[in-house]
Length: 115
Image 1 (cartoon, rainbow, N blue to C red):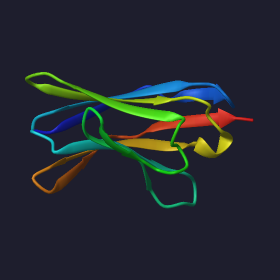
Image 2 (spheres, one colour):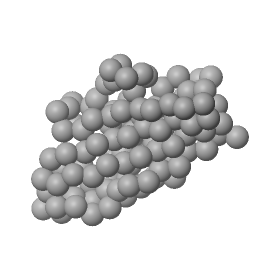
Image 3 (cartoon, rainbow, N blue to C red):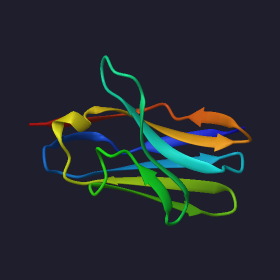
């Protein structure tokens, strides 16, 4: 079955960096990405990748976050490098993967940026 396993996240001061990782297995995915949800807000797209160089980003993270992907036979791993973090980046970050029009989600990882 499909599994998405996230790692990374944590507490960092403003201006710092964090890296999130998501390992997806069990299917062939047309794209993968990261979403986030802050308290009292809707879940929003952060970044998405179809293949190396084929990406899109939320305007709020452009120039600060970088998404990348690596694939082997059994597993896809998507990384989100987050630099110049701001307090408004504080949220639970969710890995997302789509296969055959079905969205799969990771369990979420907390990112907290202190001012």
